[in-house]
Amino acid sequence: MNFLKIIFRTWYYFRNGWSQYFAFIMAGINTLTITYYLAIEEYPVLLAIFPTFVTYVVLVVLVAVPILSAVGYLHFKKSGAFKGEVDVVIETDPYHRRLILNTEMMMPVFLQMSILLAKLTKNEKLTDDESKELSKLQDDLSEYINLKFDKRYLGVLDTDIDKIKANEKRMK
Image (spheres, rainbow, N blue to C red):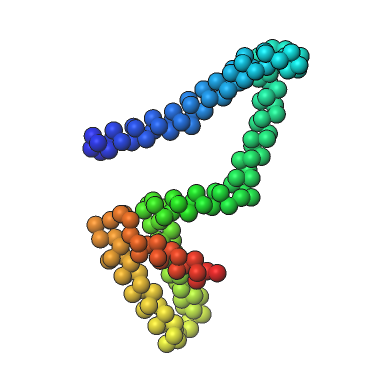
């Protein structure tokens, strides 16, 4: 692995560690500390409910964790927000896009192979339509391999996005 690749990977790991763990924990501690010492201590009514900082932290955690877990669940399972995020990733990340395209190209091949295997086990011959379909699949795969994988290029290819959209329309 060359030096620049190691540097960029290290930078990526550092950013993830910082943002997903360190900054997250520090933001929580900061929020709890500021809200308690600047808001709750100044209002006797709130101070009666939360007499100590520890009491405040325990009650906030007991209430906030279930609520925020439910919000996270809703984000992933019940709203269109996560689908929108994934759509952007697929449109912009050539690795994800290529993985989807590879899968989409291979599924018809697997289906055709299983049909052919079933026919072979029954000692049946291929029909002309099946032979033509098999030839078309082979041609499509050859074209895809030769054009798209020239030197394993993974840049932004508009044809990849077009093919994904065509597959989506075909599946509906």
